[in-house]
Length: 277
Ligand code: KIV
Image (tube, rainbow, N blue to C red):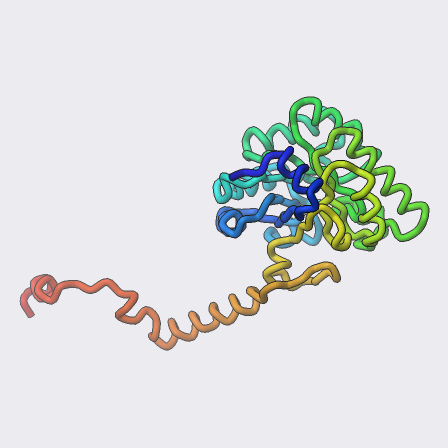
């Protein structure tokens, strides 16, 4: 059964961890739903792990919609959050139009946008228009260039207190959850204690209300780089490569397809077809 927003909040209040993973298509979303994940994120990380871009910046609304629809078909009974891509929520008008499309056309239950205090007004506008919003603070990949690259955030007094303020502002604006990315564990613990909405960490230590990882990272399907906070539970990239290599060898050696994978034609039909010869 699909978790509701109050149920997710209650889980956090009871200290029951919330699980979230990314999925961008039908098969991965189906696997996550069958495995009992609490929430799915159709993240704009799809730009890097599926579409081969160097960052999340080039991801478009059409790409997000395409993949959100596929994930929804794969996981009809799971709470799905879809990312608003870079520059798709810079004005209230764009934010409402694009968030509305992810919910109405894509089938998302909520949208996620990156930013703290500076985006509180947009979050408030979407929320009061009836669109549930998940905040995302700390390392925000869409604006990583402004943050000096893919670096841990909130390590000094100034940036740590700014992140605390961001978390408060995002909550006050009506967000239903906050993603905390790449911040020290002690800071995410403080934020989690401070706010009364679930915090979902990625590279933010164990004391958030829940955790999120990128599907392709967890399964060892993305080899370009592996951030410190990623745990690879499997190595499906190399395993898949081995399987493909084996297939090529077997086709070239006429080992595949064998009789087991071949449809047979009745001898009588063969004889008749070949004119009785
Ligand atoms: O796009 C994404 O996958 C994300 C997670 C890293 C939180 O935003």
